[in-house]
Image (cartoon, rainbow, N blue to C red; front, side, top):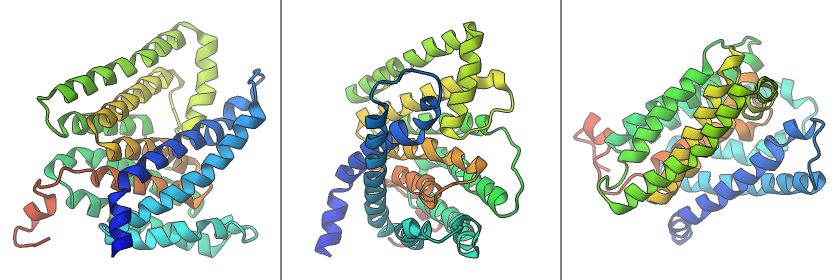
Length: 314
């Protein structure tokens, strides 16, 4: 139990390490492959790719550690943690992407992921109701992947609209979290608003430059994995990213590292499911990201499960 208490006591440290490694692997591995194939002069490309690959391994290790810590609170996460642990070895199976084993694991992730996110929601405070759109977004991405990989069909919905609704709920959650009338809250919101300014300038540049608009239509959706059925919605995607960064920065300054890291994990991986998750780790990341958010609740607040079942203890 001492080891468990040590792990739980250092959760914020592991979350910060997970956030840094996730940012590096996203910037120089997951997202970097798309602009790197364009005829652009990117200095030290090979070095950046090496940093991205190394960061990916650290990302896996810290994600696994955080998942283990959270599994003591969310019991339905335990089998998902086991799947995460063995996921690197599954890729060693020849033609693994078409095996019954992978299909079975993906179906298990779909069911257990829904159970885990619901458990995370009901074990958190009433404020977490604002995260329901994000819960839907997470499970929608997994369902889209299952539909494509196993049943060879595509889910045609406006993913950008679902994303924007998720952002609205997340921003409301971040702003209302903690003490609303406090100097730290005002500073956090102010800095968060400042962080969206570069995205507003970028959106204005895209809207006035048709060539840049075409270029960003190829890069940004591919980077995140999201499908834009209307190419003129690229400016909305830029605004959505700006609002996401605003929420992440605000949450971090307010001291809620879980909400900051968790939402970043979600938005950088959940849309990869639209074209089918290439790795199980990317399929599991949005689920763990959502539980990271709900785990950052303020102690002493009444949980949803206590409201649903007043006679329940613990």
